[in-house]
Amino acid sequence: MSKTSVSNATSNMVCLWIEPWGTDHWMNPGDEFTVVSVAAPEQSPFNVVVHD
Image (tube, rainbow, N blue to C red; front, side, top):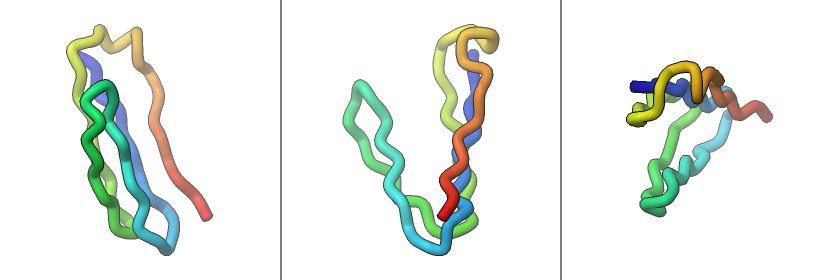
């Protein structure tokens, strides 16, 4: 199982799209989500942060 951190470090809402399902998840400023997948941890070793 692989976990990827996604943080919104902006002062605006941002939209996180999850593919291939095409689902959208709105993030308020300061929100942090953890995206979990069935991939092995070494296949997805990164974090995503959105900045102004």
